[in-house]
Image (cartoon, rainbow, N blue to C red; front, side):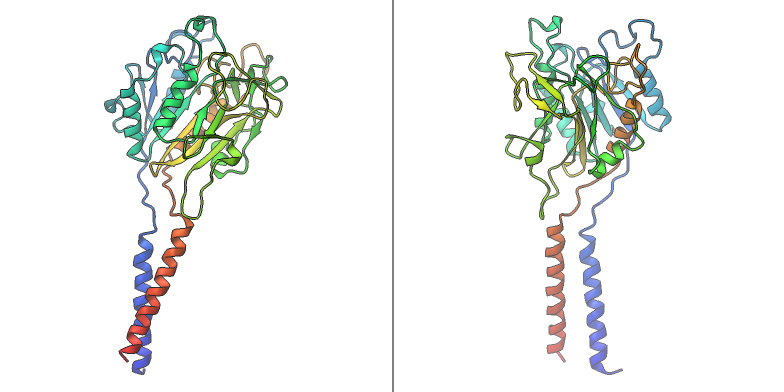
Length: 363
């Protein structure tokens, strides 16, 4: 073998080593999956309209206990927290589920919001933020009902999410359970791979009784439609936002609290409104799901519902709930944008050429 061939082989070995070492910088780390789920049940944030321990009427099934039992059987540790959110409660937690707020006693304190933000920043965290419509329940006559959307929005803004809750109510005159406000989801985002995971195995409708709809903001905080929301680009993997479920195309938006008008839409607008949306890669690897209704509650009065009292209907709420939690607890760090791979490849090629000519000159 000639010296020229030996030098060429050595150059190839150096080039291969350089490429291998450089490629290590483009592999995203994978964090182990945690199992602790915190469900917030502070006063003012009950998962149904009466006591957290007793279901009204004759239904003996206790939804929260049912869900906790099923999650425990799936291998999760579930903590029901009724004293408020703080760093101690969130320690070692992988997921936090926030139900809709019933009264202003449930408004989030700044300390709670700060605790949630700091927790999300640690990465690989899953947050479920629920809301409700601005329907003017009689007990809210004195205070108004906008806090049911405004409070979730404070948390979403604090964590840097691009999803917001509209100050409104949505209904469906045709796709419902006996009344237009008992909305059934009718449209699924089948094009998004994350939604495919969340809705896997779902063949029946999902119940959104008296929901709000969701809206979106860009990086500057300006309200925009989903279609005009900036998408990940050549040098950015964010915002990674997707909608999951919508109303039927004949959905109707109404303003139940005129003192606080809708932020983006107008009363009387019609169309297919977003009821559930998600975003990932917050702080690199944390995720959020936002819904216009609470995930768990009385039979027929939450997303979790598998039927509706007095109605011959089957719903896939439980499956959606468990699928969503499983998706949220699956580690998924922001990928290296394609542009950086291109730059890296160019750098490697330039380095390889430089090395080659360096050794050629030494010939």
